[in-house]
Every structure is written in structure tokens, then in C-alpha cells.
Image (cartoon, rainbow, N blue to C red):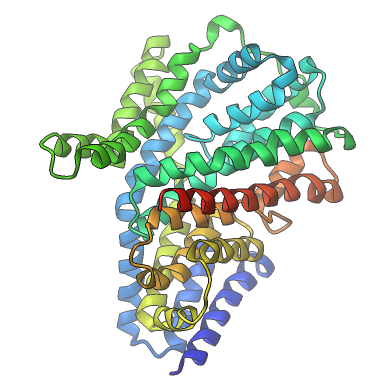
Amino acid sequence: MGTTGMLLILAGGIGLILLLTIKARLHAFVALLSACFFIGFATGMPFDKIFKSIEAGMGSFLGLLAPILALGAIVGKMMEVSGGAERLARTLIAKLGKRNTHWAMMIVGYLCGIPVFFQVGIVLLMPILFSVAAEAGMSLVMVGIPMIIGLLTVHCIVPPHPAATAVAIGLKADIGKVILYGLIVGLPAAALAGPVFGKMIGNKFILRPPEHLKNKTATPEDQLPAFWTTLFTIMFPLILMISKTIFEMLLGKTHPAMPFINLMGEPVMALFLAVFLAYWTLGLNRGNTMEQLQKISESSIGPMAAILLIIGASGAFNKVLMDSGIGAAIKTVLATWQINPLILAWGVAATMRFAVGGATIAMVAAVGLVTPILPLYPGLDPALVAVAIGVGAIGLSHVNDPGFWFVKEYFGMSMGDMFKSYTLSTTIASVAGLLVLLAFSFIIG
């Protein structure tokens, strides 16, 4: 089959995913597997090879990802139940001043977004948002947009979040580098789309958020964990993973200390140690029992099942693309294009985000479309490509994105106001992130 035929089948597979998820309302796991079978049959793959590709694709993605996500979920749940998010918000607002509450809430969203998922972060921080906005005399949009953009930016580009981690693994990128690059690129993007943009539009919207959230009472001061304890617990696994990358650059891979540093910086080990740190700092040290910690851990792992299934199916989709010959067809076509590979990766992810809706499925699906072109750029750091995909998936959130409706419900916004505020802010963050990434890639050579 020729290149044109292969690309038409790819278009049909992507169209099938859109049809099944948007129109038929099927779960993304089922839609992705359906696309795998469609592509396999249409390209003439033997039946047994289709199943082997699906099995290999799911296994390669989930083998390392499952323990990372489970351990990260436990750390996030410990921060949630301990009141760590509220402690971060109170302390940062006190330090920065009420006039800079919108900047403080962006930092809170950025920090809290490291161990918790986007939707969980919104549930966790929204009651705090209403109280601090009222106390500072600022509109909910001026304070809320920075917080949500902080959450979303980290969600898309910084491991150990599911999609960011899956992209790093799929591209065989150094996770420590992805974290480091992601934090560097994400901060200015979130600052522009959050506090700066939020202040510009903050007084243009009248919101009617849920009454039960506005009336939530603040947690007594003595029941919250210490600020530095909370911050260190959140940052601990990232410090270990980034340190591995930095020491490798400074000492070299052959230094006698590197085996131990590599062990401590491996994502599974870093998060494994972080769980025990969180058990102590946010649990046992504050009067929790081991039985309570066990229940907290169990409640955090359960919601991971659906995410793992989607990511596993996306891994299978990527593997089928490569084994069916579509990956080679993509490489043939893109080899003739004179375009920066980071812009290309960003564009693919942004297109998938606009079409599919959810950032997670858009990012992991983009890996399969971008992977074939990487051999064309032998000096390209895959960590930069991973960040480009994440940045691309931040923007263009609209009605087919579950997160869009989540934000709309909590803010009580009209559809038009959502497009003018949330959709526009996500797109600003995405474009700004791409520009910062291109400048950063030029600086590091």
C-alpha cells in the first residue's frame, strides 16, 4: 500500500476516535482500541500481529507508568487531606500581600498541580479561591484564572502527571530533564496567561458560583501543616529526579557516585521515598494512624484505573501505527517538510487537543504521530519534544473537553464568557509556552 493510502487510513482511524468519543459517547479506552483494530484490518496486518501489537503497546507504556502514577496519587491525596493546599495559599498571600493575590494563587496552582490531577486540584482549591478573592477584594476571574492555568500547565508538561509521564516514556526522554525543562517553560507561560491576562479581563465578568462553596469555613490555623514541610514534601520527588539529571551533567555518567544517584533519581524510587515522607510529614507527625493512612492510600489509587486504561490503549494505538507501516508513511511525508520539529510536535498536540478534547488522550496520541520523525533529527533532545507536546495540549480547550465543563460548573460562567476567559487563557499559555520553549532550545544549543 502506498503512502497516500496509509495516511488516509490514519485519518480514518483518528476520525473514528472522534466519532466514538464525541458523538457515540464511548469511553476513550474503547474508542482507542476500536481505532487499533480498524487500522490493523485496513492496512492488512495479520490478526495475530494486531493483538501482539496491542499487547506490546499497552505493556510498554504501563510497565513503568503504573507504579509512578499510583505512588504519585498517594502523595497528592496526602496533601489534599492534610490541608496542605490551604496552608500554601494562606502563607503565599500573606508574604506577597493582598494586592498580589492573583500571583499568589498562580503559584499555589503551580505547586499544588505537581502532585494532584487537574480536576482534583480544582475541587481542592475552589473553596479557598472564593474566600481569598473576597478577602482581597478581587474578582473571581482575576484570581481564579491564574490558579487554574497554574494547575493546567503543570498537569500537561511536568511528570509525574499521567500524560506528561506517558509522553516522556513513549519518547524515551529523560524524565528529570522533562521536569526541569517543563518547569522552566511553564512558569512564564502560566504567568502571562494567568495573572497578567486575568488582571486584564478580571472585572468584565459577573459570576454566580455554587453557594455551598462560597460558604465554606476556613480550617483553623493549628490544624494545618507547616508551610515549609508541605512545600518540601511536594517538591521532594522532583528534586530527586532533577538532581539525577544535573549530577549526570556535572560529574559524567562514569563517576563512581552515579549508580547511587541514578537509583535515587529513578521516578519509581523517588516517588516511593516521597510516599513515606508524606506518610510522616503530613500523616503520622500530625496524629494520623497507620489505619487512616491505609484508607487514604486505597482511596487515592482507585481513580487511577480509568486513566491507566486510556494511557494503555493510547500506547497500543501508537504501537499499531508503527507496526502497520503508517509510522513509516508519516516519516516519509514529514521528511519533505521544512519545519522545526518542536513546532511540529506542538502543532500535532494542539490539533489533537482541539479535536479530541481531553489533554491526556491528545498528548499520548500525539506521541504516535511524532515518534516516526525523531530519527530525522539525531541531535534533538526528546525531552524538548515531550515539553512541546505538553505545551501544545494546554491550549484550545472548548466544549469537547471535560475540564472545560468542570471549570464552567465551578465558576458559574456562561458559555460565551468561558470562551472569552478560560479557552483564550489556555491558548495564550500554549502559544507563550511554545515561544519560550523555542528560545530555551536555542540557548541550550
